Length: 315
Image (cartoon, rainbow, N blue to C red):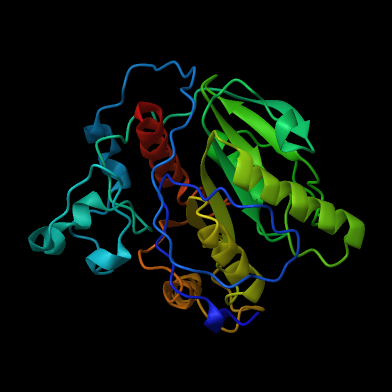
């Protein structure tokens, strides 16, 4: 289906559309829909001493640095965070570096103290049932997902990287600080994988998105070293259509050499992807620029996860 046929979507924050699973790769026609907030099960999360917001100062864009000027409709403004039009000119210090995300009062407890692999599952019902909040990482094969996950927890081999794309074939849960999960999902778009396996991955991944009540947000990884790919745009559109909360994570932003990337810098590819997806969403999805090699965006991702997670726990 042509992407131009997709109507604009109101981007979800913490709501989910209880739709049946789409097992094919063609996107059905989308319609605007306003949904009530979904009440999620209370977590058994145990808090540590909160990190004062002031300690996140180094993650914000300094006033003296050049920061892209955002209009309000291009910013991700977390729930219970008020931003007026008159404030727009002075928002720079409140926006996380390399992102469009405004910092909220829920941005605390962002540090990673420990992380451990818990289990691999091939069905959503087999995933951990302890009610802890979780963030799922998914992206095209070879997008740098395992490297980014290892960067987040500062463990080189927590998620094993492979020179062969498409290696992840299960839903892998990693528990962080005994209080929340990072979830490594199978990559998509790897043509060399058997068709039967690709179909199964699509099915159980989409089932996980639609039915996992403890899922706070999907982090959709996009390779910023190359121009936008149709399959990534379609994946983002499917998540939006099904009201699955999503954050765009642009990877490989350290790559500056003009190799097979159309001669464009990562910033240019990031802007191009945002312009393409902008036509399908009424409000801008949150996005962050990252690198698993230089750790760019690591702390910003953790702080963003923290404010989403703490809001989720409260509500």
